[in-house]
Length: 624
Image 1 (spheres, rainbow, N blue to C red):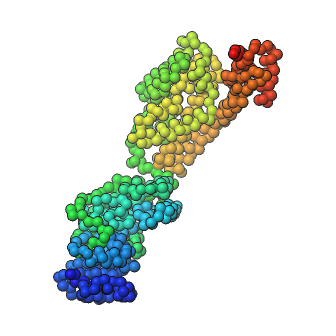
Image 2 (image 1 turned 45 degrees about the vertical axis):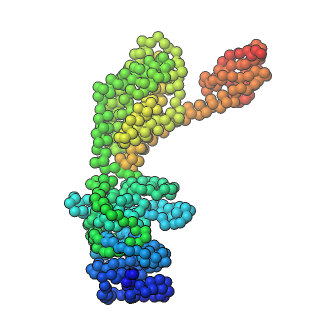
Protein backbone atom coordinates (compact mmCIF):
# COMPACT_ATOMS: atom_id res chain seq x y z
CA UNK A 1 0.00 0.00 0.00
CA UNK A 2 1.31 3.44 -0.95
CA UNK A 3 2.04 6.20 1.54
CA UNK A 4 0.83 9.28 -0.35
CA UNK A 5 1.71 12.88 0.41
CA UNK A 6 -0.55 15.22 -1.58
CA UNK A 7 0.68 18.70 -2.46
CA UNK A 8 -2.10 20.81 -3.90
CA UNK A 9 -2.96 24.30 -5.05
CA UNK A 10 -4.96 25.87 -2.23
CA UNK A 11 -7.09 27.69 -4.83
CA UNK A 12 -8.36 24.26 -5.87
CA UNK A 13 -9.19 23.10 -2.33
CA UNK A 14 -12.79 22.21 -3.15
CA UNK A 15 -11.80 20.05 -6.13
CA UNK A 16 -9.16 18.30 -4.01
CA UNK A 17 -11.61 17.47 -1.22
CA UNK A 18 -14.35 16.27 -3.53
CA UNK A 19 -12.51 14.46 -6.33
CA UNK A 20 -9.03 13.47 -5.11
CA UNK A 21 -9.00 12.79 -1.36
CA UNK A 22 -11.89 10.24 -1.47
CA UNK A 23 -10.02 8.21 -4.12
CA UNK A 24 -6.82 7.94 -2.07
CA UNK A 25 -8.73 6.97 1.11
CA UNK A 26 -6.45 5.38 3.73
CA UNK A 27 -3.39 5.58 1.45
CA UNK A 28 -3.29 9.34 1.98
CA UNK A 29 -0.68 10.07 4.67
CA UNK A 30 -0.67 13.83 4.40
CA UNK A 31 -2.15 16.63 2.33
CA UNK A 32 -0.51 20.04 2.21
CA UNK A 33 -1.28 23.28 0.35
CA UNK A 34 1.75 24.32 -1.66
CA UNK A 35 3.73 27.43 -0.72
CA UNK A 36 7.24 28.68 -1.36
CA UNK A 37 8.37 27.94 2.20
CA UNK A 38 7.39 24.30 1.99
CA UNK A 39 9.42 21.95 4.18
CA UNK A 40 8.40 18.33 4.42
CA UNK A 41 10.22 15.39 5.97
CA UNK A 42 9.42 12.29 3.95
CA UNK A 43 9.95 8.66 4.67
CA UNK A 44 11.73 6.25 2.35
CA UNK A 45 8.51 4.89 0.87
CA UNK A 46 6.54 8.12 0.69
CA UNK A 47 5.03 9.01 -2.69
CA UNK A 48 4.48 12.71 -3.45
CA UNK A 49 1.45 13.40 -5.63
CA UNK A 50 1.05 16.97 -6.92
CA UNK A 51 -2.03 18.85 -8.03
CA UNK A 52 -0.24 22.05 -9.04
CA UNK A 53 0.00 24.53 -11.91
CA UNK A 54 3.00 24.76 -14.25
CA UNK A 55 4.45 27.71 -12.31
CA UNK A 56 4.09 25.96 -8.98
CA UNK A 57 5.74 22.81 -10.32
CA UNK A 58 8.72 24.85 -11.56
CA UNK A 59 9.17 26.18 -8.01
CA UNK A 60 8.81 22.73 -6.50
CA UNK A 61 11.13 20.89 -8.91
CA UNK A 62 14.54 22.01 -7.50
CA UNK A 63 13.43 21.01 -3.98
CA UNK A 64 12.15 17.64 -5.21
CA UNK A 65 15.43 16.97 -7.05
CA UNK A 66 17.50 17.91 -4.02
CA UNK A 67 15.53 15.58 -1.71
CA UNK A 68 15.18 12.73 -4.24
CA UNK A 69 11.39 12.60 -4.02
CA UNK A 70 9.33 10.08 -5.93
CA UNK A 71 6.64 12.11 -7.69
CA UNK A 72 3.36 11.56 -9.51
CA UNK A 73 1.46 14.31 -11.31
CA UNK A 74 -2.26 15.01 -11.49
CA UNK A 75 -3.70 17.26 -14.24
CA UNK A 76 -4.23 20.68 -12.68
CA UNK A 77 -6.32 23.07 -14.87
CA UNK A 78 -3.22 25.27 -15.28
CA UNK A 79 -0.72 22.46 -15.71
CA UNK A 80 -0.80 22.61 -19.52
CA UNK A 81 2.87 22.31 -20.42
CA UNK A 82 3.95 19.81 -17.77
CA UNK A 83 0.95 17.66 -18.68
CA UNK A 84 1.89 17.67 -22.35
CA UNK A 85 5.63 17.28 -21.85
CA UNK A 86 5.34 14.49 -19.28
CA UNK A 87 2.45 12.62 -20.88
CA UNK A 88 -0.08 13.12 -18.08
CA UNK A 89 -3.67 12.20 -18.93
CA UNK A 90 -5.93 15.26 -19.20
CA UNK A 91 -8.74 13.47 -17.32
CA UNK A 92 -8.36 13.60 -13.57
CA UNK A 93 -10.05 10.24 -12.87
CA UNK A 94 -7.92 8.36 -15.42
CA UNK A 95 -4.75 9.98 -14.07
CA UNK A 96 -5.67 9.02 -10.46
CA UNK A 97 -6.27 5.40 -11.46
CA UNK A 98 -2.94 5.32 -13.30
CA UNK A 99 -0.98 6.62 -10.28
CA UNK A 100 -2.64 4.17 -7.87
CA UNK A 101 -1.98 1.24 -10.19
CA UNK A 102 1.65 2.17 -10.96
CA UNK A 103 4.22 0.15 -9.05
CA UNK A 104 7.49 1.63 -10.22
CA UNK A 105 8.92 5.06 -10.78
CA UNK A 106 11.77 5.90 -13.10
CA UNK A 107 14.53 8.45 -13.22
CA UNK A 108 14.06 10.98 -16.01
CA UNK A 109 16.00 13.91 -17.43
CA UNK A 110 15.15 17.57 -16.95
CA UNK A 111 15.91 20.26 -19.54
CA UNK A 112 17.09 23.51 -17.97
CA UNK A 113 17.21 26.92 -19.67
CA UNK A 114 19.23 29.49 -17.73
CA UNK A 115 18.51 27.47 -14.60
CA UNK A 116 14.75 27.16 -15.17
CA UNK A 117 13.13 23.82 -16.05
CA UNK A 118 11.48 23.38 -19.45
CA UNK A 119 8.52 21.02 -19.30
CA UNK A 120 7.37 21.25 -22.89
CA UNK A 121 8.90 23.78 -25.30
CA UNK A 122 11.12 26.79 -25.55
CA UNK A 123 10.51 28.92 -28.63
CA UNK A 124 12.89 31.65 -29.80
CA UNK A 125 11.57 34.22 -32.28
CA UNK A 126 9.19 32.96 -34.96
CA UNK A 127 8.01 29.36 -35.11
CA UNK A 128 4.90 30.23 -37.24
CA UNK A 129 3.38 26.94 -36.05
CA UNK A 130 5.03 24.83 -38.77
CA UNK A 131 5.97 22.32 -36.08
CA UNK A 132 2.68 22.32 -34.24
CA UNK A 133 0.84 19.04 -33.83
CA UNK A 134 -2.88 19.68 -34.01
CA UNK A 135 -4.92 18.79 -30.96
CA UNK A 136 -8.23 19.25 -32.75
CA UNK A 137 -10.51 16.25 -32.89
CA UNK A 138 -12.20 16.69 -36.26
CA UNK A 139 -10.68 16.94 -39.72
CA UNK A 140 -12.53 20.22 -40.35
CA UNK A 141 -11.14 21.80 -37.17
CA UNK A 142 -7.65 20.61 -38.05
CA UNK A 143 -7.98 22.17 -41.49
CA UNK A 144 -9.23 25.45 -40.02
CA UNK A 145 -6.25 25.46 -37.66
CA UNK A 146 -3.89 24.93 -40.59
CA UNK A 147 -5.53 27.82 -42.47
CA UNK A 148 -4.87 30.04 -39.46
CA UNK A 149 -1.21 28.99 -39.42
CA UNK A 150 -0.97 29.57 -43.17
CA UNK A 151 -1.97 33.23 -42.86
CA UNK A 152 0.78 33.68 -40.27
CA UNK A 153 3.22 33.43 -43.18
CA UNK A 154 2.08 36.81 -44.53
CA UNK A 155 3.50 38.69 -41.56
CA UNK A 156 6.74 40.59 -42.09
CA UNK A 157 9.46 38.42 -40.57
CA UNK A 158 13.17 39.05 -40.15
CA UNK A 159 15.98 36.63 -39.52
CA UNK A 160 18.41 37.37 -36.68
CA UNK A 161 22.02 36.40 -36.14
CA UNK A 162 22.64 33.59 -33.68
CA UNK A 163 25.74 31.74 -32.57
CA UNK A 164 25.22 28.14 -31.48
CA UNK A 165 27.97 26.69 -29.30
CA UNK A 166 28.13 22.94 -28.76
CA UNK A 167 30.95 21.23 -26.89
CA UNK A 168 33.72 19.81 -29.11
CA UNK A 169 32.31 21.55 -32.19
CA UNK A 170 33.15 24.74 -33.99
CA UNK A 171 30.64 27.53 -33.15
CA UNK A 172 27.92 27.86 -35.77
CA UNK A 173 27.16 31.43 -36.88
CA UNK A 174 23.84 31.46 -38.70
CA UNK A 175 20.65 33.44 -39.29
CA UNK A 176 17.25 32.10 -38.23
CA UNK A 177 13.71 33.35 -37.96
CA UNK A 178 13.36 31.26 -34.85
CA UNK A 179 14.18 28.09 -32.97
CA UNK A 180 12.12 25.44 -31.27
CA UNK A 181 13.76 23.57 -28.38
CA UNK A 182 12.26 20.45 -26.80
CA UNK A 183 13.62 17.78 -24.53
CA UNK A 184 12.11 14.84 -26.35
CA UNK A 185 9.86 14.07 -29.28
CA UNK A 186 7.47 11.44 -28.01
CA UNK A 187 4.97 13.35 -25.91
CA UNK A 188 5.49 16.99 -26.81
CA UNK A 189 2.69 18.22 -29.06
CA UNK A 190 5.17 20.54 -30.72
CA UNK A 191 7.59 17.88 -31.85
CA UNK A 192 5.99 14.45 -31.86
CA UNK A 193 5.29 14.80 -35.59
CA UNK A 194 8.92 15.07 -36.64
CA UNK A 195 11.30 13.66 -34.04
CA UNK A 196 11.89 9.93 -33.90
CA UNK A 197 13.85 7.78 -31.42
CA UNK A 198 13.71 10.53 -28.82
CA UNK A 199 12.85 9.83 -25.20
CA UNK A 200 12.64 11.56 -21.85
CA UNK A 201 15.50 9.45 -20.48
CA UNK A 202 18.07 9.66 -23.30
CA UNK A 203 20.01 12.60 -21.86
CA UNK A 204 19.49 14.75 -24.95
CA UNK A 205 17.45 17.74 -26.15
CA UNK A 206 16.45 18.81 -29.65
CA UNK A 207 17.05 22.24 -31.19
CA UNK A 208 15.14 22.87 -34.42
CA UNK A 209 16.39 26.01 -36.16
CA UNK A 210 13.98 27.48 -38.73
CA UNK A 211 15.62 29.44 -41.53
CA UNK A 212 13.53 29.79 -44.71
CA UNK A 213 15.39 31.67 -47.44
CA UNK A 214 12.41 33.38 -49.09
CA UNK A 215 8.74 34.25 -48.74
CA UNK A 216 7.87 32.10 -51.75
CA UNK A 217 9.53 29.05 -50.18
CA UNK A 218 7.75 29.65 -46.89
CA UNK A 219 4.46 30.30 -48.68
CA UNK A 220 4.74 27.05 -50.64
CA UNK A 221 5.44 25.06 -47.48
CA UNK A 222 2.40 26.61 -45.81
CA UNK A 223 0.19 26.04 -48.84
CA UNK A 224 1.10 22.35 -49.14
CA UNK A 225 0.65 22.03 -45.38
CA UNK A 226 -3.02 22.98 -45.76
CA UNK A 227 -3.70 19.74 -47.61
CA UNK A 228 -1.26 17.44 -45.83
CA UNK A 229 -3.41 14.49 -44.80
CA UNK A 230 -0.82 12.40 -43.02
CA UNK A 231 1.39 13.52 -40.18
CA UNK A 232 4.81 14.16 -41.71
CA UNK A 233 7.77 12.34 -40.18
CA UNK A 234 10.37 14.82 -41.31
CA UNK A 235 11.44 18.38 -40.59
CA UNK A 236 10.48 21.29 -42.83
CA UNK A 237 12.92 21.70 -45.75
CA UNK A 238 14.31 24.90 -44.22
CA UNK A 239 14.98 23.52 -40.72
CA UNK A 240 18.27 22.45 -39.12
CA UNK A 241 18.33 19.89 -36.31
CA UNK A 242 20.72 19.58 -33.37
CA UNK A 243 20.47 16.80 -30.80
CA UNK A 244 22.81 17.31 -27.88
CA UNK A 245 23.08 17.40 -24.08
CA UNK A 246 24.21 21.03 -23.73
CA UNK A 247 24.06 24.11 -25.92
CA UNK A 248 24.68 27.82 -25.61
CA UNK A 249 22.84 30.33 -27.83
CA UNK A 250 24.21 33.85 -28.21
CA UNK A 251 23.08 36.85 -30.22
CA UNK A 252 24.15 40.45 -30.85
CA UNK A 253 20.81 41.61 -29.44
CA UNK A 254 18.53 40.40 -26.63
CA UNK A 255 17.05 36.96 -27.25
CA UNK A 256 13.28 37.02 -26.83
CA UNK A 257 11.83 33.59 -26.16
CA UNK A 258 8.81 31.80 -24.78
CA UNK A 259 9.43 29.17 -22.12
CA UNK A 260 6.36 26.98 -21.70
CA UNK A 261 4.13 29.88 -22.71
CA UNK A 262 5.90 32.53 -20.58
CA UNK A 263 7.57 35.43 -22.43
CA UNK A 264 11.17 36.05 -21.36
CA UNK A 265 14.30 37.80 -22.60
CA UNK A 266 18.01 37.24 -22.08
CA UNK A 267 21.39 38.19 -23.56
CA UNK A 268 22.24 34.53 -23.95
CA UNK A 269 20.61 31.16 -23.39
CA UNK A 270 22.40 28.29 -21.71
CA UNK A 271 20.59 25.02 -22.23
CA UNK A 272 21.49 21.80 -20.44
CA UNK A 273 19.89 18.41 -19.93
CA UNK A 274 20.30 17.14 -16.38
CA UNK A 275 20.31 13.33 -16.78
CA UNK A 276 18.14 11.18 -14.52
CA UNK A 277 17.78 13.79 -11.75
CA UNK A 278 14.21 13.17 -10.67
CA UNK A 279 12.16 10.07 -9.91
CA UNK A 280 8.72 10.18 -11.43
CA UNK A 281 5.83 7.85 -12.16
CA UNK A 282 5.59 8.30 -15.95
CA UNK A 283 2.34 9.71 -17.29
CA UNK A 284 0.11 7.32 -19.19
CA UNK A 285 1.16 8.89 -22.52
CA UNK A 286 4.88 9.26 -21.78
CA UNK A 287 7.01 6.93 -23.89
CA UNK A 288 10.28 5.71 -22.40
CA UNK A 289 12.97 3.35 -23.63
CA UNK A 290 15.09 0.83 -21.74
CA UNK A 291 18.26 1.58 -23.71
CA UNK A 292 17.69 4.87 -25.52
CA UNK A 293 20.19 6.12 -28.07
CA UNK A 294 22.29 9.02 -26.82
CA UNK A 295 23.96 9.74 -30.15
CA UNK A 296 24.32 13.42 -30.98
CA UNK A 297 22.94 14.92 -34.20
CA UNK A 298 24.31 18.03 -35.89
CA UNK A 299 22.31 18.34 -39.11
CA UNK A 300 22.78 22.01 -39.96
CA UNK A 301 23.85 22.03 -43.63
CA UNK A 302 20.57 23.70 -44.58
CA UNK A 303 21.23 26.68 -42.29
CA UNK A 304 22.78 29.78 -43.94
CA UNK A 305 26.37 30.69 -43.14
CA UNK A 306 28.88 33.15 -44.53
CA UNK A 307 27.52 35.37 -47.28
CA UNK A 308 24.12 33.61 -47.24
CA UNK A 309 23.73 34.47 -43.56
CA UNK A 310 24.64 38.12 -44.11
CA UNK A 311 22.00 38.42 -46.86
CA UNK A 312 19.25 37.46 -44.38
CA UNK A 313 20.23 39.12 -41.10
CA UNK A 314 17.94 41.84 -39.73
CA UNK A 315 16.04 42.45 -42.96
CA UNK A 316 12.65 41.23 -44.21
CA UNK A 317 12.68 37.88 -45.96
CA UNK A 318 13.19 38.35 -49.72
CA UNK A 319 10.35 37.44 -52.04
CA UNK A 320 12.56 34.90 -53.80
CA UNK A 321 15.59 33.00 -52.60
CA UNK A 322 18.97 34.66 -53.27
CA UNK A 323 21.81 32.19 -53.61
CA UNK A 324 25.22 33.36 -52.47
CA UNK A 325 28.37 33.44 -54.59
CA UNK A 326 29.67 30.45 -52.65
CA UNK A 327 26.56 28.44 -53.47
CA UNK A 328 26.67 28.91 -57.25
CA UNK A 329 30.43 29.13 -57.72
CA UNK A 330 30.46 25.75 -59.45
CA UNK A 331 27.55 26.73 -61.75
CA UNK A 332 29.34 29.93 -62.76
CA UNK A 333 32.45 27.91 -63.59
CA UNK A 334 30.39 25.71 -65.92
CA UNK A 335 28.63 28.67 -67.55
CA UNK A 336 31.90 30.51 -68.19
CA UNK A 337 33.32 27.38 -69.77
CA UNK A 338 30.20 27.07 -71.97
CA UNK A 339 30.64 30.68 -73.12
CA UNK A 340 34.05 29.95 -74.65
CA UNK A 341 34.33 29.64 -78.45
CA UNK A 342 36.10 26.29 -78.36
CA UNK A 343 37.05 24.12 -81.31
CA UNK A 344 34.75 21.38 -80.00
CA UNK A 345 31.81 23.80 -80.04
CA UNK A 346 32.49 24.90 -83.61
CA UNK A 347 32.98 21.34 -84.88
CA UNK A 348 29.71 20.18 -83.30
CA UNK A 349 27.88 23.20 -84.76
CA UNK A 350 29.08 22.35 -88.28
CA UNK A 351 28.32 18.64 -87.89
CA UNK A 352 24.83 19.21 -86.43
CA UNK A 353 24.00 21.70 -89.22
CA UNK A 354 25.37 19.28 -91.83
CA UNK A 355 23.15 16.46 -90.52
CA UNK A 356 20.11 18.74 -90.10
CA UNK A 357 20.41 20.12 -93.66
CA UNK A 358 20.61 16.64 -95.16
CA UNK A 359 17.69 15.54 -93.01
CA UNK A 360 15.63 18.50 -94.22
CA UNK A 361 16.36 17.76 -97.86
CA UNK A 362 15.51 14.11 -97.22
CA UNK A 363 12.30 15.08 -95.38
CA UNK A 364 13.42 12.80 -92.51
CA UNK A 365 12.29 13.64 -88.98
CA UNK A 366 14.58 11.07 -87.21
CA UNK A 367 17.68 12.55 -88.87
CA UNK A 368 16.62 16.07 -87.88
CA UNK A 369 16.06 14.96 -84.27
CA UNK A 370 19.55 13.46 -84.22
CA UNK A 371 20.97 16.82 -85.33
CA UNK A 372 19.06 18.56 -82.51
CA UNK A 373 20.66 16.31 -79.89
CA UNK A 374 24.13 16.90 -81.32
CA UNK A 375 23.74 20.71 -81.50
CA UNK A 376 25.73 22.56 -78.75
CA UNK A 377 24.10 25.97 -79.28
CA UNK A 378 21.97 25.86 -76.16
CA UNK A 379 25.01 25.96 -73.81
CA UNK A 380 26.20 29.51 -74.72
CA UNK A 381 22.57 30.70 -74.80
CA UNK A 382 22.10 29.63 -71.16
CA UNK A 383 25.42 31.30 -70.30
CA UNK A 384 24.24 34.50 -71.99
CA UNK A 385 21.01 34.42 -69.98
CA UNK A 386 23.01 34.40 -66.74
CA UNK A 387 25.17 37.24 -68.05
CA UNK A 388 22.07 39.26 -68.91
CA UNK A 389 20.62 38.52 -65.48
CA UNK A 390 23.69 39.62 -63.50
CA UNK A 391 24.91 42.32 -65.92
CA UNK A 392 28.12 40.35 -66.41
CA UNK A 393 29.65 41.91 -69.56
CA UNK A 394 32.38 39.29 -69.92
CA UNK A 395 29.85 36.47 -69.81
CA UNK A 396 27.55 38.26 -72.28
CA UNK A 397 30.32 39.06 -74.75
CA UNK A 398 31.88 35.60 -74.49
CA UNK A 399 28.52 33.90 -75.07
CA UNK A 400 27.59 36.26 -77.91
CA UNK A 401 30.93 35.63 -79.62
CA UNK A 402 30.41 31.85 -79.40
CA UNK A 403 26.85 32.11 -80.73
CA UNK A 404 27.83 34.36 -83.66
CA UNK A 405 30.76 32.15 -84.66
CA UNK A 406 28.54 29.09 -84.43
CA UNK A 407 25.79 30.69 -86.51
CA UNK A 408 28.25 31.92 -89.15
CA UNK A 409 29.83 28.50 -89.68
CA UNK A 410 26.41 26.83 -89.62
CA UNK A 411 25.07 29.21 -92.29
CA UNK A 412 28.14 28.59 -94.44
CA UNK A 413 27.68 24.84 -94.11
CA UNK A 414 23.95 24.97 -94.95
CA UNK A 415 24.49 27.24 -97.98
CA UNK A 416 27.29 25.06 -99.38
CA UNK A 417 25.19 21.89 -99.05
CA UNK A 418 22.25 23.69 -100.72
CA UNK A 419 24.42 24.71 -103.68
CA UNK A 420 25.77 21.16 -104.03
CA UNK A 421 22.32 19.55 -103.81
CA UNK A 422 20.19 19.47 -106.98
CA UNK A 423 16.97 19.50 -104.93
CA UNK A 424 15.25 22.90 -104.99
CA UNK A 425 11.63 22.20 -104.06
CA UNK A 426 10.49 22.89 -100.45
CA UNK A 427 9.12 19.83 -98.66
CA UNK A 428 7.02 19.46 -95.49
CA UNK A 429 9.97 19.59 -93.06
CA UNK A 430 11.27 22.79 -94.62
CA UNK A 431 7.90 24.54 -94.87
CA UNK A 432 7.06 23.62 -91.27
CA UNK A 433 9.79 26.05 -90.13
CA UNK A 434 9.07 29.15 -92.19
CA UNK A 435 5.89 30.42 -90.53
CA UNK A 436 6.63 30.89 -86.79
CA UNK A 437 3.94 32.07 -84.38
CA UNK A 438 3.36 32.62 -80.68
CA UNK A 439 3.28 28.87 -80.05
CA UNK A 440 6.92 28.68 -81.09
CA UNK A 441 7.72 31.47 -78.62
CA UNK A 442 5.96 29.45 -75.93
CA UNK A 443 8.14 26.43 -76.75
CA UNK A 444 11.27 28.61 -76.54
CA UNK A 445 10.20 30.03 -73.17
CA UNK A 446 9.52 26.57 -71.76
CA UNK A 447 12.84 25.28 -73.09
CA UNK A 448 14.72 28.24 -71.62
CA UNK A 449 13.23 27.60 -68.19
CA UNK A 450 14.04 23.90 -68.45
CA UNK A 451 17.59 24.65 -69.61
CA UNK A 452 18.24 27.01 -66.69
CA UNK A 453 16.73 24.58 -64.20
CA UNK A 454 18.75 21.67 -65.57
CA UNK A 455 21.98 23.68 -65.28
CA UNK A 456 21.14 24.81 -61.74
CA UNK A 457 20.19 21.32 -60.55
CA UNK A 458 22.83 18.71 -61.19
CA UNK A 459 20.40 15.88 -60.55
CA UNK A 460 18.26 16.83 -63.59
CA UNK A 461 21.08 17.71 -65.99
CA UNK A 462 20.35 14.54 -67.95
CA UNK A 463 17.21 16.25 -69.34
CA UNK A 464 19.30 18.66 -71.41
CA UNK A 465 19.01 16.43 -74.49
CA UNK A 466 15.23 16.60 -74.21
CA UNK A 467 15.40 20.39 -73.91
CA UNK A 468 17.56 20.57 -77.04
CA UNK A 469 14.99 18.55 -78.99
CA UNK A 470 12.11 20.68 -77.70
CA UNK A 471 13.56 24.05 -78.68
CA UNK A 472 14.96 22.85 -82.05
CA UNK A 473 17.63 25.50 -82.62
CA UNK A 474 19.56 23.97 -85.50
CA UNK A 475 16.69 23.01 -87.90
CA UNK A 476 15.44 26.60 -88.41
CA UNK A 477 19.06 27.69 -88.75
CA UNK A 478 19.56 25.08 -91.49
CA UNK A 479 16.27 26.04 -93.21
CA UNK A 480 17.31 29.68 -93.17
CA UNK A 481 20.61 28.65 -94.77
CA UNK A 482 18.71 26.66 -97.41
CA UNK A 483 16.57 29.71 -98.17
CA UNK A 484 19.72 31.81 -98.48
CA UNK A 485 21.26 29.23 -100.83
CA UNK A 486 18.12 29.19 -102.98
CA UNK A 487 17.78 32.95 -102.89
CA UNK A 488 14.25 32.50 -101.53
CA UNK A 489 13.51 35.46 -99.25
CA UNK A 490 10.31 33.99 -97.80
CA UNK A 491 12.00 30.79 -96.62
CA UNK A 492 15.13 32.61 -95.40
CA UNK A 493 13.27 35.31 -93.44
CA UNK A 494 10.63 32.97 -92.02
CA UNK A 495 13.20 30.47 -90.71
CA UNK A 496 15.43 33.30 -89.44
CA UNK A 497 12.48 34.73 -87.50
CA UNK A 498 11.91 31.31 -85.91
CA UNK A 499 15.59 31.09 -84.99
CA UNK A 500 15.56 34.57 -83.43
CA UNK A 501 12.35 33.68 -81.60
CA UNK A 502 14.03 30.65 -80.07
CA UNK A 503 17.14 32.60 -79.11
CA UNK A 504 15.34 35.58 -77.57
CA UNK A 505 12.70 33.45 -75.85
CA UNK A 506 15.30 31.16 -74.32
CA UNK A 507 17.48 34.03 -73.05
CA UNK A 508 14.53 35.82 -71.43
CA UNK A 509 13.03 32.67 -69.93
CA UNK A 510 16.34 31.26 -68.68
CA UNK A 511 17.31 34.60 -67.11
CA UNK A 512 13.94 34.82 -65.36
CA UNK A 513 14.24 31.22 -64.18
CA UNK A 514 17.70 31.86 -62.78
CA UNK A 515 16.34 34.91 -60.95
CA UNK A 516 13.59 32.87 -59.30
CA UNK A 517 16.12 30.18 -58.44
CA UNK A 518 17.94 32.84 -56.45
CA UNK A 519 20.97 33.61 -58.61
CA UNK A 520 20.39 37.36 -58.66
CA UNK A 521 18.33 39.88 -56.69
CA UNK A 522 15.68 41.71 -58.72
CA UNK A 523 17.41 45.09 -58.32
CA UNK A 524 20.39 43.71 -60.26
CA UNK A 525 18.37 41.64 -62.73
CA UNK A 526 15.69 44.14 -63.77
CA UNK A 527 17.82 45.99 -66.36
CA UNK A 528 18.79 42.84 -68.25
CA UNK A 529 15.28 41.40 -67.96
CA UNK A 530 13.86 44.66 -69.33
CA UNK A 531 16.16 44.61 -72.39
CA UNK A 532 15.27 40.98 -73.08
CA UNK A 533 11.56 41.82 -72.75
CA UNK A 534 11.89 44.65 -75.30
CA UNK A 535 13.56 42.32 -77.82
CA UNK A 536 10.98 39.59 -77.28
CA UNK A 537 8.22 42.20 -77.58
CA UNK A 538 9.52 43.33 -80.97
CA UNK A 539 9.74 39.73 -82.18
CA UNK A 540 6.27 38.97 -80.82
CA UNK A 541 4.48 41.32 -83.27
CA UNK A 542 5.13 39.23 -86.41
CA UNK A 543 4.63 36.10 -84.31
CA UNK A 544 1.22 37.39 -83.26
CA UNK A 545 0.30 38.02 -86.89
CA UNK A 546 1.50 34.53 -87.76
CA UNK A 547 -0.56 33.09 -84.92
CA UNK A 548 -3.67 34.93 -86.10
CA UNK A 549 -3.05 33.60 -89.63
CA UNK A 550 -2.88 30.08 -88.20
CA UNK A 551 -6.12 30.65 -86.31
CA UNK A 552 -7.70 31.95 -89.53
CA UNK A 553 -6.49 28.89 -91.46
CA UNK A 554 -7.96 26.51 -88.90
CA UNK A 555 -11.25 28.39 -88.93
CA UNK A 556 -11.45 28.23 -92.73
CA UNK A 557 -10.67 24.51 -92.82
CA UNK A 558 -13.15 23.82 -90.02
CA UNK A 559 -15.88 25.80 -91.82
CA UNK A 560 -15.42 24.28 -95.26
CA UNK A 561 -14.33 20.68 -94.64
CA UNK A 562 -17.26 18.38 -95.43
CA UNK A 563 -19.47 21.28 -96.53
CA UNK A 564 -21.86 20.40 -99.40
CA UNK A 565 -22.49 22.96 -102.14
CA UNK A 566 -25.01 21.96 -104.85
CA UNK A 567 -24.25 18.24 -104.38
CA UNK A 568 -20.49 18.88 -104.33
CA UNK A 569 -18.66 17.89 -101.09
CA UNK A 570 -15.54 19.85 -100.13
CA UNK A 571 -12.62 17.69 -98.92
CA UNK A 572 -8.84 17.85 -98.24
CA UNK A 573 -8.79 21.60 -97.76
CA UNK A 574 -5.43 23.32 -97.24
CA UNK A 575 -4.55 27.00 -97.08
CA UNK A 576 -1.82 27.90 -99.56
CA UNK A 577 -1.79 31.61 -98.74
CA UNK A 578 -3.66 33.79 -96.28
CA UNK A 579 -3.44 37.25 -97.83
CA UNK A 580 -4.95 36.96 -100.43
CA UNK A 581 -6.70 33.75 -99.42
CA UNK A 582 -5.68 30.88 -101.64
CA UNK A 583 -7.11 27.40 -101.02
CA UNK A 584 -6.40 23.95 -102.39
CA UNK A 585 -9.70 21.99 -102.34
CA UNK A 586 -10.89 18.64 -103.61
CA UNK A 587 -14.46 18.64 -105.00
CA UNK A 588 -16.21 15.30 -104.57
CA UNK A 589 -19.10 14.92 -107.03
CA UNK A 590 -21.16 12.15 -108.60
CA UNK A 591 -20.53 13.58 -112.10
CA UNK A 592 -17.99 15.64 -113.95
CA UNK A 593 -18.12 19.36 -113.19
CA UNK A 594 -17.92 21.97 -115.94
CA UNK A 595 -16.32 25.37 -115.57
CA UNK A 596 -19.59 27.09 -114.69
CA UNK A 597 -20.43 24.63 -111.90
CA UNK A 598 -17.00 25.08 -110.38
CA UNK A 599 -17.51 28.85 -110.43
CA UNK A 600 -20.86 28.42 -108.66
CA UNK A 601 -19.13 26.44 -105.91
CA UNK A 602 -16.43 29.12 -105.70
CA UNK A 603 -19.04 31.86 -105.25
CA UNK A 604 -20.70 29.85 -102.45
CA UNK A 605 -17.33 29.44 -100.71
CA UNK A 606 -16.72 33.21 -100.97
CA UNK A 607 -20.18 33.85 -99.53
CA UNK A 608 -19.44 31.56 -96.58
CA UNK A 609 -16.05 33.13 -95.88
CA UNK A 610 -17.02 36.72 -96.64
CA UNK A 611 -14.02 37.43 -98.88
CA UNK A 612 -12.62 36.67 -102.32
CA UNK A 613 -10.85 33.34 -102.69
CA UNK A 614 -8.35 31.86 -105.16
CA UNK A 615 -8.94 28.14 -105.64
CA UNK A 616 -6.74 25.25 -106.69
CA UNK A 617 -9.34 22.59 -107.45
CA UNK A 618 -9.05 18.85 -107.74
CA UNK A 619 -12.22 17.01 -108.78
CA UNK A 620 -12.94 13.54 -107.47
CA UNK A 621 -15.81 11.40 -108.80
CA UNK A 622 -17.99 9.51 -106.41
CA UNK A 623 -19.09 6.17 -107.93
CA UNK A 624 -21.66 3.97 -106.22
